[in-house]
Length: 136
Figure (spheres, rainbow, N blue to C red):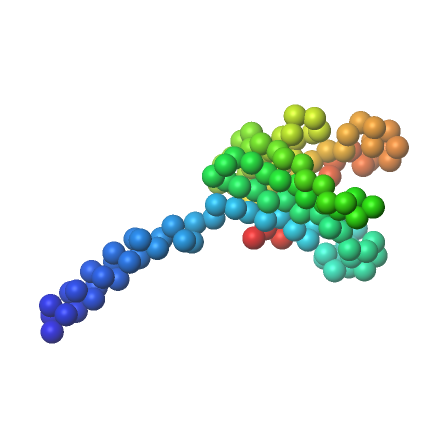
């Protein structure tokens, strides 16, 4: 009986080691973002402004982040960024053209800045962008 129990325990330990990689996060999807200063949640933002087809997929193995969004004409646009810095709490990505984008992994927050041309149109108060998002 002890031998059978020992075999079962060893089998479970080995299988646990073999399958441990299945639960590691290699990719992070960032969706359902909204401005917490203006709305209580994503659903309230969608109700006020309509659906926003805008998301990020961060690939930690390849050190890339893809921004995907739909243009007003219905065309899908993908913009590739590279991961500049990554820690257990933050990821900072860049495309080399626009301001860097930061992801606060603990608080599930997207942080960036508008370009100067957007700030010129919207005003200085719209320079910083801070959005609450769903990270999965």
